[in-house]
Amino acid sequence: MKKIIIAALMAGIMPKMAGAQDIKIKYKGNTATLIVDNSPKYLILPVEESMPEAKVKLDNGLKTDTWMDVRLAQRKSDYHVPFELNEGKRSVVKIENISKDALSLKPGAIRLAYSWDVDNTEFYRPTYHHTPPYGWMNDPNGMFYKDGVYHLCYQYNPYGSKWGNMHWGHAVSKDLVHWKTVEPILARDPMGHIFSGSAVVDKDGTAGYGKDAVVALYTSASDENGQIQCMAYSTDGGYHFTKYEGNPVLRPFDGLKDFRDPKVFWYEPSKKWFMIVSADKEMRFYSSPNLKDWTYVSAFGRGYGAQPNQFECPDFIEMPVEGQPSKTKWVMIVNINPGCLFGGSATEYFVGDFDGEKFTCDTPPSVAKFLDYGKDHYATVCFSNTGNRVLAMAWMSNWQYANITPIKQYRGANTLARELKLYEKDGQYYLASNVAPEVLALRKQEQVLKVGMVENSRVVKDANHSDENAFELQMEVTPSKNGIAGVELYNAKGEKVNIYIDLKAKRVVMDRTQSGLTDFGKKAEPHDIEKAFDAQTIKDGQEMMRKRNAVNYQNDFALGTWAPLNLCQGPRYKVDVWVDKCSIEIFVDGGRISMTNLVFPKKPYTDVRFYAQGAPAKFDNVKIYRLAQ
Image (tube, rainbow, N blue to C red; front, top):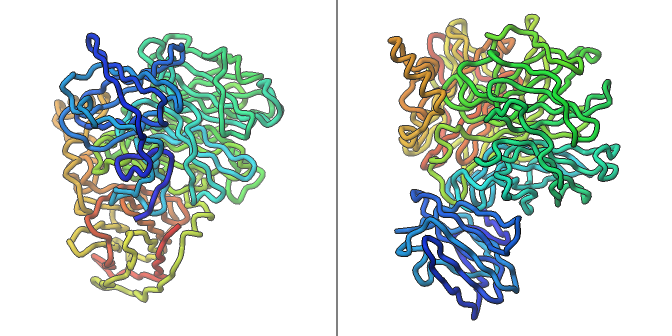
């Protein structure tokens, strides 16, 4: 198990506890006040996930003091989270919405510490995917490249492993593979949660903070202020940010409730910055000379793509068409929740032209193109300032069940870094999403499997020797006409994932119904928009759309996902399968099809069964790699 050492982590070994300090507790009304003189660095709070949120605040008597929502333990402790104090000084911490009889307020339940070093306690923590050291993570956002370093920011809750207290967590990497956690760059404040957004390198200093300052645009969200767009800037290369004193820089002109996730880009023909913002069921464009003063330009998207939906987390990129270097198109990435073919959240995109005023899509509103055909691929956004390369990452989960996955020390992982390319097929433009070449450095050991022609099935025992369940299976598959060619990854407990190409149905399928832990999917919670659509569908005498679309649907987690095979050329298909502790990512023909799904096997998948149905199939150039950082 990997060891994680940072300043403060969740429950575990505490090598340096506070010494003589006492915690004095006073009560008044529904508020408990904790006083610590000569404070150590952290107050250690016990969390019980099933409890309602209490409010906790470090009270320094300043306008910037902010209430945080923490599910403080009332009967039992699931894990702990650190809460930063005024180290070396007096600290006053106020807690509201908690009973005086709660476990958290019992002597010794809340503790003091200078630091923690903690071993990972999660069986399902990935071996080679990025995860937060502790707490909750969802959308990647504010991603940029500068001075040889990739900066990955993300929606982060440092006070529990469920959604809340949105900060921008921060990790850095020089190779897109090894990520180092550093201090969050934006913390929740009295204006609201820090929702998703973007960061750009202001090469000409248009915002007034100097050449090459890093400027972040983000959504501040609260019941009091609604969803408003704010700005922050960094003059040290993107490690520390100062929030703009003139925030907010943009409010919705019509009071719209869902108005968030600004993506900023420079449009050279107009010599202006543009911002694309998700506005419920459409995207709105704004322009600015200085990243502070924004003017409405146009809107796109109402009625476009998968239905029903709500637009979120946009990106907008000009890309060359593969094989046609002089031809470029604009690609609008739109993350939708709901909208996934199989329920919950997903990533789709539109291709067209942009003239500095409006985006014109090449396809009619009814056409939906998905960037990934799994159920656990959401909030895809691209790094800025990467030159001619388009590099993206996405969150590996689904809003239907993200809060209840069988993990507690942390929740949320990101996909492998992917390189996006635009290609033309049958007069249409599509995005290919393949693993970035840097990721191949994870390969540590290669084994060639001689499979060849399979008439029924062929089993390779102990093909995967990784105790971490971290391996890559690469092969070229040639199914026979109208036949099925597939592989099953399975373990000693009989848990398995079935991946196959079905030429008759013309689709690629990943079925995880028997993959391991799946029953938590019965507790999945669809979006209200999806619930209303389901109710109407059932009233009309039909099955729920996601049940109708899925393969072998059993619950909102236990199902199979599929992708249309016509995105590829055939008749031979190059299939690349990346397996980690709790995820499988499939790439067919260099990412023309990508499919990302979580899995929770109780033991590593060790064996592989190659099979054919209806007619023989051929498996060439089969290799398996052990993967490790």
